[in-house]
Image (cartoon, rainbow, N blue to C red; front, top):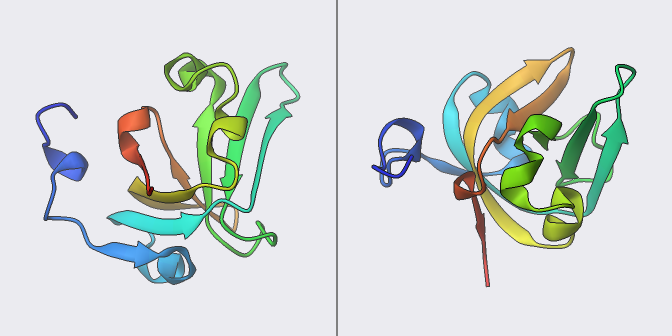
Length: 114
């Protein structure tokens, strides 16, 4: 990541609006959008997962996922940190049971627009 290699390299990734995510499944991209809803959910196994949603209909549109194991890198409340922010998120778009997601493991994958 720090070396700017792979999916963290600049200039090699296409930047897309979140609505275009279905056209880029299984590809590493930079996705742009405003987080309109963000929440942390408790899982059945007692763990937690954070979701950053670019659209109120999170079942049909791309979500950014932060797993509890990575929370320490993002601060105590990752969902609250990014709620309402204009973001560009770098990662691979995955289809998880019909829902499009990008999992982030490090804040360097998220750029907040000023």
